[in-house]
Length: 358
Ligand SMILES: C[S@@+](CC[C@H](N)C(=O)[O-])C[C@H]1O[C@@H](n2cnc3c(N)ncnc32)[C@H](O)[C@@H]1O
Image (tube, rainbow, N blue to C red; front, side, top):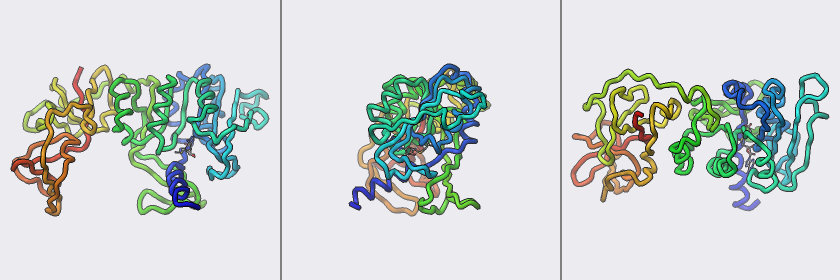
């Protein structure tokens, strides 16, 4: 196998994380009203093994679905995990229970061989996307940007699993800014089954008594454009603004708020808050203006030559002070990296979302 093929295979393996039925059911219970009379597409899902297919097939009648379509990528093997050893894939259509037993039987499921490998970007998969109303899946982590862009291009409703860091992608963040995407209910830890040949990891990896391998990730969330009650609940705030507790950034007119629960209830200016704010965001309560990581051209200052002084005292010339919100400090912080520019000392915050009260 060539190095290129091996690298591609390794990369593809990183996408093989399988969602548990309990996580799907727990999230989907908040969206039931959206599904009546709708065609659902799960387009990164081997229908014979995907819990997304399982969930919708068994809930077909109680959700009042019109049709369920799933497609799988490459493999047609009947084993637990996609081995990607076949270039052709299948699509499956389920129109609900016909024999009255309220269970999706094999003879009620239409299986069709796809012409290509089932890539969600292929014309035949796009054709299925166009026939669908709502897309629900856990798409490949490595293609998240492209996946969301396609959903938006075809103006589809969706509920998909992703990583919190996806929020900081420029294209994705713009959608948050424009209230075209938001976070669903669950955010945080989620455990996934992984293929039998997955490499062990030091943390967040285990094998259960049946030999099944698992990985967990601490920053998983659901991305959606389906309206949910949570999105209209006000974040209850208890802290009052105090200029000493909330320093101003040096490179943008906003205050630093290190924890979402510390957002002051009486501050009308711009505030920089952690990414976890998005889990509590109510567009009637706050307006999102930007993000410090990509800035969208909002930073008011560019730092010239910067010296980074690491925790261990190592000094290095860098330019990264320009990539985030900056606070000036009087003295070097203990146990933290800081920066020197023209004899002044600065620290950089984690990526911050810039918000303002409405
Ligand atoms: C994170 S896994 C989730 C699988 C399944 N949706 C679930 O939640 O259990 C992403 C899946 O997308 C598949 N995939 C990778 N690239 C794809 C592509 N270009 N088009 C469609 N599916 C793809 C992978 O094979 C993998 O099974």
